[in-house]
Image (cartoon, rainbow, N blue to C red):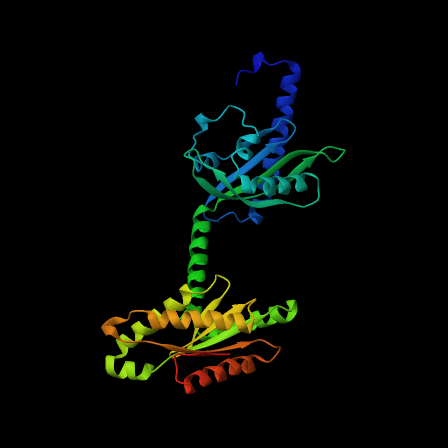
Length: 325
């Protein structure tokens, strides 16, 4: 750098900047035996002269973003990095820095997305603190370290996705794709609690495929599985997004109808019964279902289900292919 072109005041300012930087480097050197920066993705330290708005940093930081040092201005302002922050991360990141500068927090620490030269987003973990203040307490200098955690974030997101899939699988009946018994019972408990709190109507319908054992015995279990899947599909297509269908066991299905009275539940159940009776099944096999509806009246869970089950039994006793409630 050609210092001859600078004025005396400019040279004094440069000397003060170098002095602050050297003090920070010396302090860091003295403490490095107590610091562990052996994480994968370490991009090195950064130093921020707040008054001069200049940032000094390890070239790895910009290389991780696809830049070379030649791409950058001779003096890099703080805004070079902040203006590349993801819109959703900008304010939380700036707030963390502001709080540290104001002395409200001992360190500045955050994770954020920052845009690379090619337009992609990298995840950085940044940690630092104000190291020098003037006599009035205003921040003069800050130092910190930054890590590229993009790969770790991607692995974490993949793991979260796998966990969500496992959660869904644990709640799903493998054959029909609807909720299994445990999941539909948990949903019913939740709906009963909400119904009790908000005094809103809640009804359920228990469905059972008529003469399912003879279908299995004469056509085989593969055919029986096909019937189960098709009946579940028909019921699912006839309900609202608010409603929930689950396989209660064997050839029985439990339908939960929030904000629905017994009368309305019977109408829904009757529509479903007709759809199944009118549906075409392979080998011209005729499939029908029977149903039993019940409305929640503050009873216990098993009593609620038993009420629907009794009405289902009545439908079976009265000739099947009926709905009772």
